[in-house]
Length: 136
Image 1 (spheres, rainbow, N blue to C red):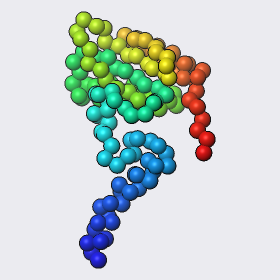
Image 2: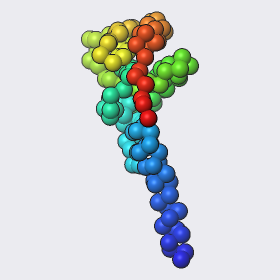
Image 3: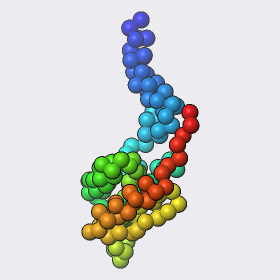
Image 4: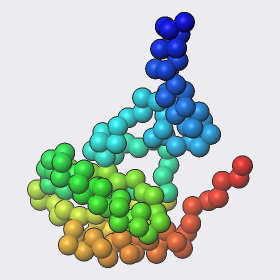
């Protein structure tokens, strides 16, 4: 009986997250889903997202990339937008910057010094063309 209880205790978190993933479709709650860090640096987020933000940086360390991605995500969350932010390593001859992608529209690249202008433009574009409402 003790072994059965222990097995249920270990399996319960995965079962709950799988149930939530099935109901909501949010891939971040899928059991054994890829980590946020790997998604941020690879830029391979599953599913079509309504807003994606590409941070184009020169040889970023993992700590720098995560810090900047979290700041960008926090800025957009304050405006009521849940966006996927990922980091792209670019060659030294290209300018570092930020690109906002809303559906098939692309805004930028904005230089890092003008990222706040890009956020304002992306928020305006997002609000002009809101995501479709899911029926259910």
